[in-house]
Length: 433
Image (cartoon, rainbow, N blue to C red; front, side, top):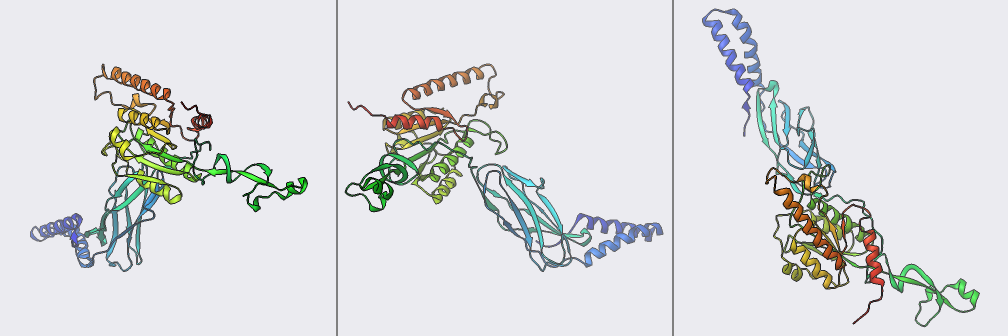
């Protein structure tokens, strides 16, 4: 593209030509008085027309954000811009789930002798992978006579990770296994939590000798500990449907919003305690995170949750059982609105395989007031939805009879009571038939 005259420049030329023509042909000096300044401005703008096209570079301070965090979208015109350029205006196309500062996402900056920088604040309101479209950048010359539209670089991708709420849960985990982690096992071993002092036995490590007790009793005694053990925590996110309205981090949350944010919070909690965490997405045949631990594993889980989508290819009960084999001693946390028969059937399959299953209800509590009644029969729809909720209540009661507790997600402390009960039941002696 090249420098083109603005509408103001064209109007000034046309009006000046008409007024000067009237002054000449009709002998009206007053018309010349009005026409000469416009002709002078048009000539001035033409004479000082820029010859070079400015270059625009875009950058983001951070392309990975958490929900509610903000970054700065910066447009930079490098040093050495044409001195005849007077003003640079940038307008960023507004995208859903982004909040801009200024709200219009447009900013203008006069050109000085140095580098020109235009900044727009961008705040992400919902998790996901989105892009900031290329801004419209326009440079104008002196007196607004000429302008050129500059094509900037490609759009900037922004990854918004789910907001990790301050989730905490009791350390009681059913049937811990392995020799890492922060949960106390029911058997002695290498660990950090004191179990007691006992007499020395063959095979005990010398560094475990308690010299104070040994000197007092005249016999060798050692300090015994409980072994630190971990468990495999399987987080299953049901992306088979999105119930409710999503308004971002500042408004109401849909069932999918609640499930994704809860999965991120639970994963962070258990990984911080040294457990192994696995993620299963029911809406993807291939996307998922294998069991692992550590901070790098948390980032892998968050990157996978960003792609959770209700439009994914949902697996049936047989595919879930075949593609996602879960160990019998695992703690399975199912995040679902518990409306699909496929999920209810797979939960029963996990229970029969010996897993400890906890169903976390992500159905919005105000879902009856959110759904669009105008799009349905106003007489039959409320009754149909009420009957569906009664069927759901019956299914949840059946899960409860199988030993699957159902708790609504309430943030920190949601799983405390059910984890204590599960740990108590796993510690109880079992009668074999």
